[in-house]
Length: 198
Image 1 (tube, one colour):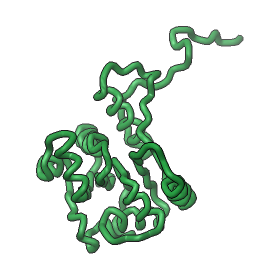
Image 2: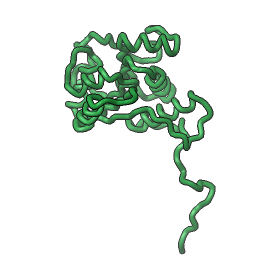
Image 3: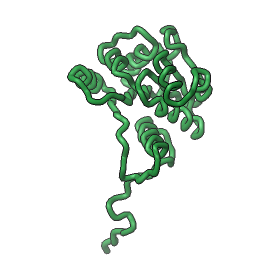
């Protein structure tokens, strides 16, 4: 049976992260992606990438209506490896922090937290005000992971796609998705090998 991962895309800049996760899961195999794409997420995907709802949904194995709080992923009895919200708007962050489940994205995240499964929020906002920071603390205290998509310059990527792919790879690492799609840190002098004693 395939492992399941919930991927939500909300109304913050960075729809490319959620789409990148969906693409990687499909390419790797062995995973079943469950997508929840909010209305604001659709607007951002079109503004940033020229993609309509149907264009984004084709990358997922299962698609859920963001208003369907009776969906499978709204129940803890539906087994998943966790959920990633990529990108995560400050509104969605606030909803998760306060368990205000007025849509399927926040309800599914609430289920993940109560079942003690992994929840990762790719938060997109800068600068941050005190409410944002307190909401991040609240989610962290509940067991969630706040993951701003900060580029890793040590990977020496040459373009934006490289930066996005590296971040997507690090997100997949958090769910133990096996892949070799990123350049991993090998120390300051990777060419030098330590001499064995003896």
